[in-house]
Image 1: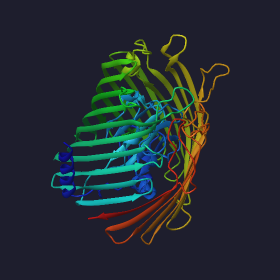
Image 2: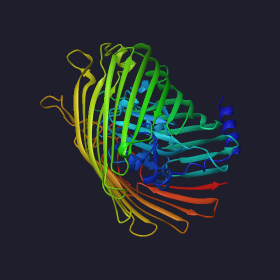
Image 3: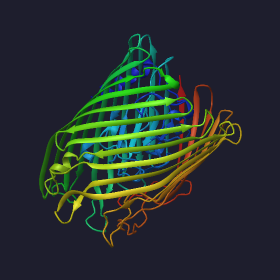
Image 4: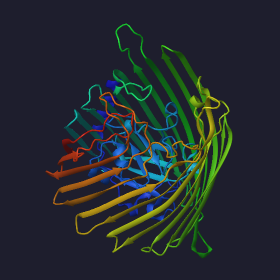
Length: 633
């Protein structure tokens, strides 16, 4: 099977290249995440951040978590070295309270409690990442409490082109990527393959990931377009530490994880007229995860063996109607959609203490509507409503509203958003043999934000600031009174996020971004820690970049404060009291050797900061140097 995948990738590479798909400047970027309707970024009322391919290429980011560090309001916990469990906290929401889409497929993993582990995801075949912040369950259903992360794949169009990239460096790192695609008559065809490996300086800590990507599109007739995508990720990790039972973290050289993730989609879009478009998309997510903690001594049984499998099948149908200009120049757009989702989960755990087994199918059906009215260059108002019917918890209704006010094409833009969200209980939370509760209800949230953005000096200065609040209720947590999971936690996060970008001279740019927030557990009792774990009160960064004469250079800084910790002790005796605290400085540079070849290098963690993203994670990587070459054809 592996040989077939590599042969298929090689065939796709021979067909052309991934060069098509370069992103345009943010002000002209066409977004679909905020409303499921194509809109320019500056013309949508929702709070959306976009990381373009040019931006993460300039950073020389090789993983999605590295690209997301530059998004205000989004705290990335990478866990440590590549391969460590990675989480995303949007505006104080938990890591399983954000919808993640990759190539249009929802990849929230039931075997991980509904979150997505970003360590699996590289940037092969990715053109940009859109981050919608605030409750978005009206359009995206369960998990969209904190927002939506949409990883948009490259559309392989235009003249066939290709590229091959290789790099290597410190910490046993190497990366190989090859991709290609283009237009061949009525077909758009492309794909790629990637292999990445890292090893920490610490023993028994390594990571290997293989990725295959493919996409095909076909112009069936005038206005009718069909497409299909596939992405397969195989990740293997060796962890250096055992599960802690108390404050001491024991060393373990035989703990290994393997995850195989396959996601695919088929879709059809028909522009019936200038006023009406319909789309049908079917997708499937298939996850197979194996965790084995082998015996510490010869002859002993495995300490733990767990196999988790999940398959999520989704069909989404939408119709968009734009009747044209109404009296007063008002433009109205109405989106109506239906969604069908089946989630199948299987989990088997074996240990010396016994065995447990889970086999559960959850079905969800939903209908949603969004209406938007716009007076060009002045006001845009939108509102939405969604109704979900779940085979286990019943019905859930969510609503949203958005307002954008602007003073002409160059004036300030004022945004205000209200959104409701929910997270459906996962099968493991219903059926866990020790703490499961079949009577659980969905977690619920309301979010509110108000923001202002302004371009000055003909776009040489870009300013944006947003105040936000997220309230969640009925959070699922373990109750010491009933000894099982219950809906009783309440949280609130208030904060401010902002960014500024300056272009002081030709070829130069400066950017700074920061978030200050106060994530609180409102259910904490007297004497209990009320700060939410995993979320620092402040985080952000900045960059100084230059581009000209074939040279590109970027100096970046990422920082964050700490958050509550249990103060666990590592195998070398060091106590961990400040997880999350870091100050990471990096320098990336590339030099065009010719029109087809580019040499690039980067130095990571220039200050050799000793950091760790959680008190259970291995140390983050120290100072490292990497060198590579890219050839285009």
